[in-house]
Length: 258
Image (cartoon, rainbow, N blue to C red; front, top):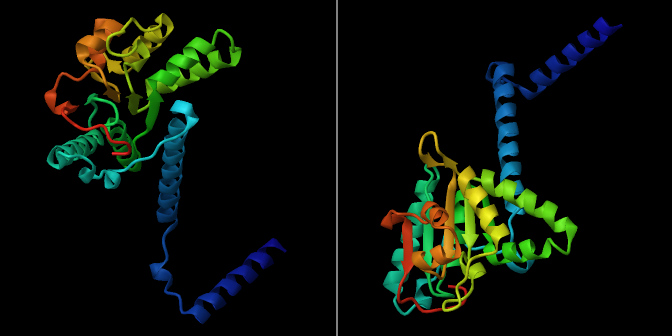
């Protein structure tokens, strides 16, 4: 019975081939179909991984932010040439970060567009296949403080810390605000210091003396000010030494949504 069924199927297929005038020599081979299936499955897994890290982001007020390089409007700044140069520099660094790991700092006053360009870099790199995670350090500090009165937050922090260690592109937004405003700078909460130091250690390949992933910080503070908040070794590790990896928003006007 089974043999008869298979024969019937074979004849039915032959009739379809003849009726549709299908050139069987042009049909994909099983090996080609298998390769395509594996490729699609790997792509799906990669996209799921990208979404997973993005979902682990820590947003201020739990409100995700989005920005792309197309949204960077240089006309909102009186010095449009400087705004254009900063946008171009951020784009160039994002292109380099597709295949290389190094840290980037965006430094300047509030509201000048540091977070916007960091988000644009994040958007570009996620579309290029790299995992990325956005962390508001002020919100992270709030969680560190609240964990003493809310036991569920401790588990959240452990998960966030684990993801911060593994993600390709880690963005630390408003880095330094957790240490106070200029003029009232103080050391950051010890638990946050410890978390950040553990994360920074995990993101360095000490055996080969190179970075594991890239860390992008946006900050209103200078490097010496950051060293008053955190251990110097940590700041030296996270703040890029290469001037080409520093975007300095000097003399830029504070404009919302730049």
